[in-house]
Image (cartoon, rainbow, N blue to C red; front, side, top):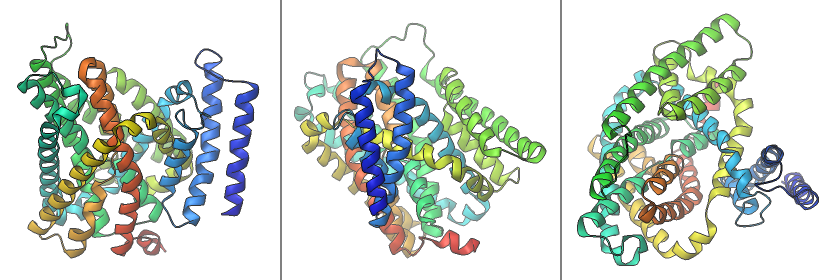
Length: 436
């Protein structure tokens, strides 16, 4: 721990010195600033993770707090321009996490728990959306972006807020599972629930976005209809995911070497090309992982082992960037509301997930500890909130600020609760023990 602290201090000092001698902003050498920011985050985040691991806390929390500390709203070692230019890292990390998640979902092994996964996902999302929507209406006078709206408009915005805040985080959940080496009924059920819920949230957001466009008389000027967008996003992503799976399998069987580099290249292409073709990189790589594991015979353990060395720095930078993107100034203003919505969200998700597990006979351990996997929130909610802010500038910006403030709470508290639950369920370290 002492060594990691010294290394972290040295990296921070070097970055501060580099910024003072050669300041990097949005107008001066943006390429150099991006490289500097990436290299700094790799070193600093990994050392911060080591410090937190020595304290028996999740490495992920160390990555996040490293980003918060060095981000634009704190020490300012990372500028807004640097953080913005590193968006590609976010896309690649989400793609890698989705590919790993799909590879970890063995549908044959999950089949006995499939009913529990589906029922729990639906109950949790419906309960959270209803609870948050009603809370938004009750406190509409305290939400500046809802003041002055008509009744129908307030209900439309409240429902949109409910969908955004009900979203979960497969990225955080999988990262905690990987870090702790967890395996067992709680881990498998949790993974199935958060992945399915993430897909359902994308579908629900498309529906409420169409409702918002109708209520606020937004005319797209030749844009695709929401239904067509949804069809392209899900159907097109599934087709491209199948092609990605075949490409990875062919490389593994024919070339056999440097599989991790090939997968990284595929994830970069999926992120960049997918965004231009209205495809979801998360769905593309999730489908690819599912097919590799359950149809094509390339086991998820092989993918995880191959991607571990290359994925670690990507994950560290991804979660550090999530911390750097948190709006501390907005949180300072919105923290009472952020805390209120975080409590409402947690209560709805925990209660309904536990009820779903009990209703389907998932088992005492699953019923007690699986709901904690639903607390972390990051990833898809940020992207959807950004989209809302662009399409509805009058009230979307305020909604985005509230969503990011609530996410700030959940992204810090969620990993700690999930790790605690996995430890109490006795599933941490089980994967390594089984492999041994």
